[in-house]
Length: 312
Image (cartoon, rainbow, N blue to C red; front, side):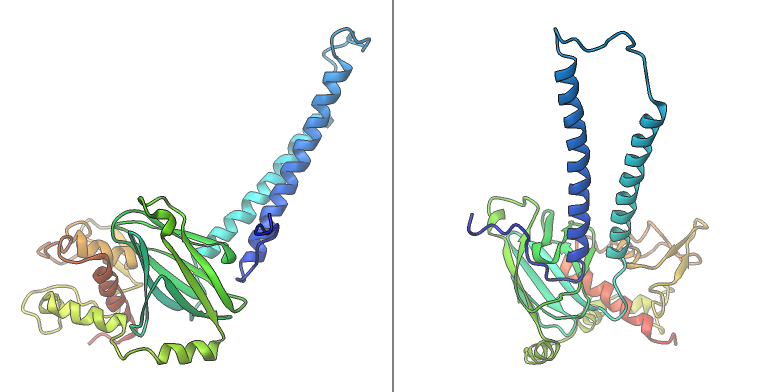
């Protein structure tokens, strides 16, 4: 019992709200359960076999009482639902100016890469009081990025990119777990989140070995795969210009419109015939068997970086 904390440490900005929501739901459940338990025990005692309780009017009802507790419980339950739903909405919309880190789950390790290219294995250094977005991908089976002290958890799914964001509120080292059974060594798939003061984090990040950023690695991969031969401004093959595409609506051949988000760019690389841009022929080959999850995330990051540039 010495190692069990009744109230775990809160090390992120969202942790207090999650705890408040949990304890509110727990109090509501206990209160409702206690009232029902008392009523059941009272009826079991008063109307037990052989008792002298008055049973002459078994159909007597109190509509106001029934409506009152039903509506009251429904309002509280609906309020808790709206509260929780709002938390999910905020979880899917990270603040502007967040630090972006690429995260990869693999049997049985966590691998991270910062925007400037610095890599970590089973460790993730982040600054205090700064939102951090972790874009997750899995290279084999489903894994789950779980940091109890931050009260955040997000699955990393093969063939799909997910993300989770948090803002650490206190420095220290916190456990990182995989919360999805992923194989025989699942329990050993552990890591650490190291929260540093902003100036210490900046110094740590700059002290890493010189390397290309994720977007720069994506650009090199974009060229090595021959993508620039079709999507370049001087290409002989007519293909969409990718400058300022990310985040904007794209008209498709079937008359529909899609927003060019991460999933759209990913689908366009792996399933190019699925959503063909209007005015273009479906001649692009699939790269499904040619790029890994790591490389795919780099390509998406590169295309996203083109959104900040002006179209030629």
